[in-house]
Image (cartoon, rainbow, N blue to C red; front, side, top):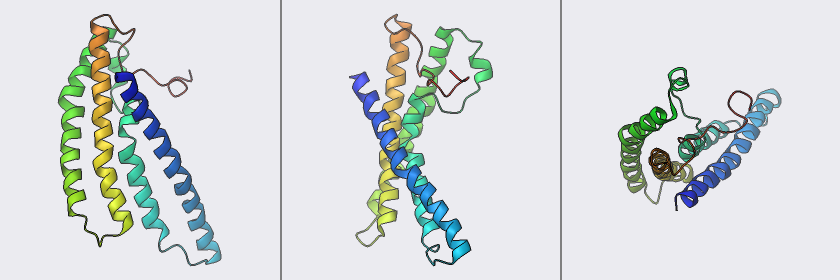
Length: 171
């Protein structure tokens, strides 16, 4: 079950990343062309790019956490034993990731409820991303928590999250 949840969070993160990064880059290039050529489209592009960036950020929190891409003090972590790393991740999940996710979900749902039928599509999509993204962060936190408990019980080979290949130290 944990593997299924992890695959779901990773798949959603990958889809959202490609579906937003490519248009953000395209709109950025179009804005530069508009400044030079006066195409008259630049008024709407900054708002659209900002909305896509918001969606990208919120919808990939969980993906980033599972790929070990979140910010932490690795100078200390590298020196710790795998058991200590697992305990620190468990504490981080219980006292930071899951409570933060709950708060973001709560306020995200409030934002969705306040979106009326008359709100712009961009606003609705941003508010839904602000609600759904933290749910996937919470799911990622549960995956990391379960994997570290399994590691401490001898049922998993290493503490979670596992470093993403190709992103850390050129490996």
